[in-house]
Image (cartoon, rainbow, N blue to C red):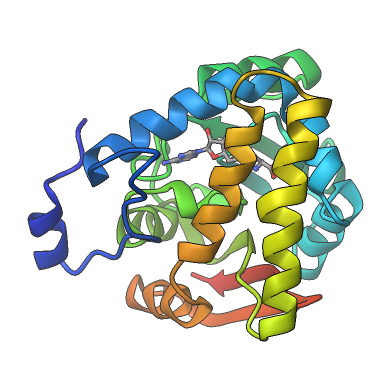
Length: 255
Ligand SMILES: C[S@@+](CC[C@H](N)C(=O)[O-])C[C@H]1O[C@@H](n2cnc3c(N)ncnc32)[C@H](O)[C@@H]1O
């Protein structure tokens, strides 16, 4: 389904995570197709790219953040924007055989990689329309993908719908550092060094572009307060954001 035109979305109180980024796509309606093709084209290289730039956001960071947010053995989990399954696999380890973990992503290329690596259910779909029953989950994760949705309100309403009362949503993100020195360092590393390294480490035509887009969306992204506000507007409670090393953010909210 196509996204409603920009004016209609604004009237409905929706909030794009960042403005349109000319040079990548021209109008908001082209964003989803651009993002899907970008991840399809680079899926084979994603894990290698992630290893290059992860800066500690690897498996251990993902696992510890899931545990801190309250993920426990036996829970039912959906990993939205699962990509190749980097968060999914850590969630599956924590919930164990008693639990149930599914991944969901719009990119067929990313899903093919996830299915190659993990024997877990993976669904093709988008955060905006989850193919799941009301109150059917204990926990929702979304790793490094909030910047790719069309607006914050739609996915947050869906997360609230499919979580049981008391359920948890955990959003992992990279945020624009506040101070000028930290910002300059991040801009140099993530905006220049990483794209250049990726062109060498994963020479698919678009690996460098993927990481350039990654930084450009971080720079243009709405502040943490806006994300927290929209979680509250969607009906979540105990909404908080924890920042590590000035850049790694985890947003936690309870249904
Ligand atoms: C940077 S990758 C993150 C993958 C994984 N979660 C991780 O921790 O590495 C972003 C993922 O978001 C997915 N994505 C983009 N738009 C989405 C949407 N509207 N709903 C759900 N996933 C989306 C992309 O296909 C891609 O796999």
